[in-house]
Image 1 (cartoon, chains in turn cyan, orange):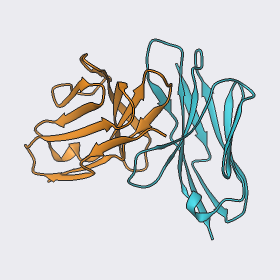
Image 2: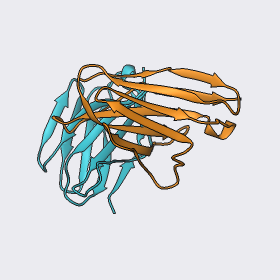
Image 3: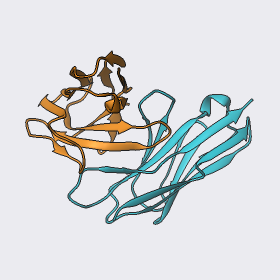
Length: 111
Length: 115
C-alpha cells in the first residue's frame, strides 16, 4: 500500500535559521513526488515535482531533494512569510490516478 | 503555474438545502478533476475523481447521492452537496490535472457552514 509520512508535525524556527522537512514514502512505481505549500484557509499551492532519485529542484529559499525512500524540503534562511503547512504527496504506478498525501508539516518562522 | 478557480470561497446555508461549488481550470484543459475535503488541522481527504464526460469515481465511504459531481467540460466541474446537514460543514477543495502535465493544481477552497 502506498504511504507517505512527514516529519516533524510542527516546526518553529527563528528567522534565518535553516532547517529541513522530511517526507518518507513507500510506493509502487513512483510517478512523481510533489511538494505543496498550504496557507490557512487556502488550497495547496504547487511547489515542486521530483521524479527520480538524485533529482533536486530549487525555488528561492526552498530546495527539494529526492532519494529512493524519502524527500527533503530544505529551507535556507527562512523568513516569516515562509510560515505555512508544507504537504508532500506521491503518485504511484498503479491504476489509480490518486495523489497520496502526508499529514503535513506546520512551519512557523518567528521574526 | 496553472490557475484553478473555485467558487464560492465561503457559503453558509440552512440544513436541508443544497449547495453547488464550481471549479474551473482557467488556462488549461483539465482531463481529470478531483474533489477533496479537509478537516481542521488534517490533511486532504480525496472524495472523488472525475474524468471529463464520465461518471465520477467515489472513494470508499463517500456517498455519491449526497455529493453529486459533474464534469461536463474540460474546464468545469461542480460539486453539489445535497440536503446538507451540519456534519457536512467542512473545507472543500477542488483540483485539476491536464493531460500534458503530471501536476495537480488546486483551487482556493470553499468553506461550507451548514446551520
